[in-house]
Length: 209
Image 1 (cartoon, rainbow, N blue to C red):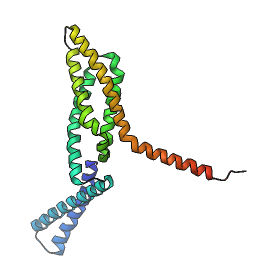
Image 2 (image 1 turned 45 degrees about the horizontal axis):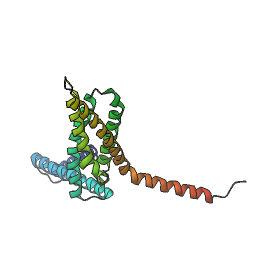
Image 3 (image 1 turned 45 degrees about the vertical axis):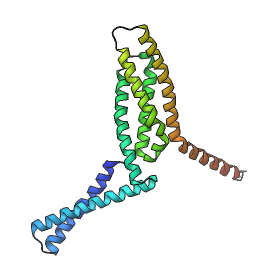
């Protein structure tokens, strides 16, 4: 849910309401300037709160989520945002040129998963493995890899650990790619359904002479 849009809608409803209440209180009810001003502030607050509640309720209804579920998802997305910041920072710091393409791809995929979930929170449950397992693993591996790679002197043990870490990261990238596919699975099924309907409709059309 776009919080800026909610704030904007609430504000645009509250300001005219406050102005109208002030005029009605001051001129219509012959209240003092300060009393009218207080009434207008109270009215603005009520309108602002009411519009925010209505917009949020409609959003949650469309998403099929309860307020408790949405708060739970929001908290996890906030934590995921911090982890993604660490991940992207670690990926950009790395100087391992052979893995540059994979690192850029990983940044794009993780950003895509997060943005889709942010826009449609109900997708969070489809990305459960990403948020509770794969993201943590890839963050830790990337940071540890950078730590080992930055050592001025390498040993056989460090070289073996770096090699093993890269292989594990490749496996994680494949898993995260599947996480994105899992999030988009319903969209792909819906698209396939619509394509099948369109094809059947075309097949039933009479052939033109």
